[in-house]
Length: 371
Ligand code: AGP
Image (tube, rainbow, N blue to C red; front, top):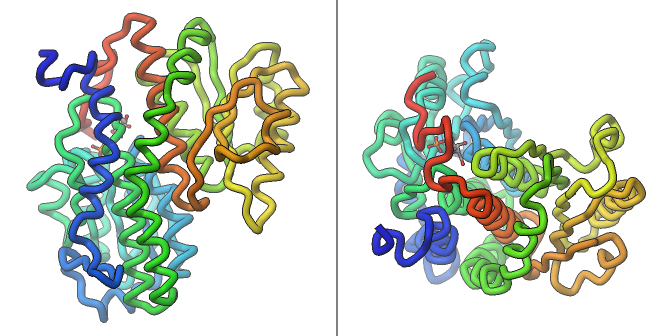
């Protein structure tokens, strides 16, 4: 009913708008007044955490994209080698895991069969398994050695939204906690990132308050046969997530690419009027920002239409953008928390305009309990 949906047309839209609160709830109680992380729920001793020499993240679909983002953050903060693998591939290739491997299984529902089977395989090899999960008491956290709950509240829409953002936050917390335990980052660096994380609910609210142009865009592109999404670094999994949302909900062909891969093949797809979304990283000390702009130039030169997501005061992007979607200023690693939101809204709105059932897309189930 409309009441259950809090006045929104879809659970998905309600859940998109719940994201500022959901992210705040993931953070709640997980740090002390000195911004030191307090993750008592990780029932793996600090000694054991110090002996870990490899992290393997396993997940499916949107949770897998959260894992891709997590790899960038965890490796940067902890210097522990971190792999991300689709749960459905993991156990069938004789993966190298053992007692000093930390396997992180990410699952909103906690019931995904592919992920559960991968966990069991890892445990047979004596790896420690930590679940990042939203559903209290579900199978995956019950079987794992430890769990970080995301506390997003029930996610009803089949397309994951607040599930994804809170998985990101939980993974950031895990990465910072490991850095704290292992001493790879200094306390003030961790505190600075924690302060930035605490500002994220307000940043996400800012994105939602300025969402009008994205709604108009969905009207404009309702008949597009295909949409591409480009990103680099943590913007790459954001691009993959934007494409997945569009496939799931609008049933149109969509693909996410690492922008640097464009010239290695996908550039052949570019043609007049093809919508191409691009996530532009903040201007930093590295060359990432300039690289994405040059990728955008390649896209523009072939007549495709660029929809550019960039920081609000990034004037360099203006010549490369047919449409600009402005994002609040955040550091590169945290940018997925704000950059994903317009893509969620775009897919939700486009599917609505096409008359599709956004909460129950065809052929999909909320949790996939068969392998
Ligand atoms: C996301 O929109 C999808 N419906 C799907 O990819 C989902 O993320 C995947 O099936 C994993 O689900 P889980 O997080 O419940 O394990």
